[in-house]
Every structure is written in C-alpha cells, then in structure tokens.
Image (cartoon, rainbow, N blue to C red; front, side, top):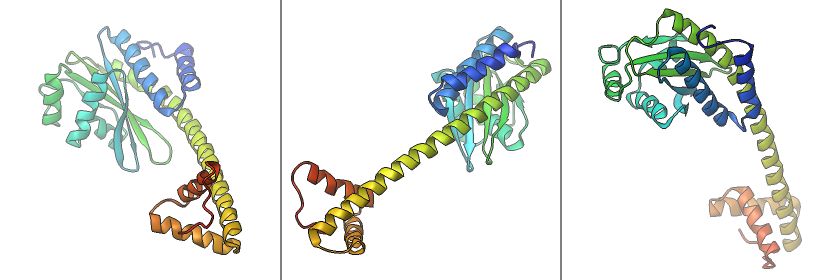
Length: 245
C-alpha cells in the first residue's frame, strides 16, 4: 500500500495497538487516530476518522480521531441511514465525492457539508459472529478520494480488520474471565449467606435458600445483593439474629 505505507512497519504498528490497548474501546480509539494520521499524510490534507460498530442489528459509533469525527459519525446514526451504514450492509466501500451535491442521503450530506466535510469514504470491516464495523473517513475537499486512494484505504482496512478481530477476541476472553470471577463471587456470597441463615433458623440448606430467595423477591433485589447485605451486616458487627425475608 504505497500511499499509506502498508508494509511490515504499518502492520507491526497495528499489532502494537492491540498489545498496548487495555480493552477493545481503547484499541478502537487508537486505531481511529492512527488511521486519520496515516490517511492525512497520504492525502496531504486533514482527514478525520470515525469507527462505527454494528452488532445484533444495533449500530453505534465507538471511536473517533477527534470529537468532531465522533460527532459527524453520530449524525448519521441520528438520520438512520448514510454511507457508513450502507457500507456495513453491503460489505462494500461507499464513496461520497461531494456531500454538497450528493442526492443519496440529502439530509445527512447537507449537514456534514455545512460542517466543512465535503468528501466521505466508508470502508467496511468484517468481524465474527455477525458483527460488522466500518472505517469512516471525512475530508475537507471534494473529490478527495480517487480510485487509487480507495484501493489503498481498502488494503489498509484489511490489515486493520485483522487487528480488530484479534482485539475483539482478547476482549471477549477477558470478559468471560471477569464474568466467571463475578459468578464465583456471587456463588460464594450466596453459599455463605445460606449457611448463616441455616445457623440462625436451625433449618436445612434447602429451607435457608428458600428464605433467601423469598427475601430477594420481596425486596426486588438480586439474590447476590441480598446475600452480600446479610454478610455485610455481620461484618459491621450488627448481626441479624433471625434473618427475615
């Protein structure tokens, strides 16, 4: 990728973004900034970048190279259609050469044209499990993206896609680990609280769990929260001698 320097160095930088990011959100922010910088250098003009993620039929802007980039990407969400959403639906790049004259999305194009963004290029990123994303580029001059630059951006996107998939996989594993840890803490709290109720009421484990469940339903609280509340009362040396639902 000559214009944007898609070589071993750029691929390595994308990999470093994954390694250095704390989570998927921070990776996407870094990716948006990196993409804007790369395209701006290649086009010799200030190009903004927004990244939109769609999962389970919901679309949301998740990152931008600047506040303005996020804002103009969110404008499209408000209108419910536009080049980015079209790119994600069709899995093909969408170009708006001049937002001041394009008739496909007149309201959206007029809005961002007024903000000084006359060219838009949206390149889709395919993810796993039915999710899609798109890199959205906004340039201040009309006809900013020619065929060569579109191919260049698509090649860059193919590498960014690989990095994003890796980041999503890592993030999913981290989330599963956190969910498991949370589930274990919840199970421990419930087991301890059940034991406390058994001791207080001289009842079986089954009866103690029924009492705890009844309290959860009656107070409209999660079972874990009721259990932790009971244990906290003991920690604070204000024991509930007879736990009542």
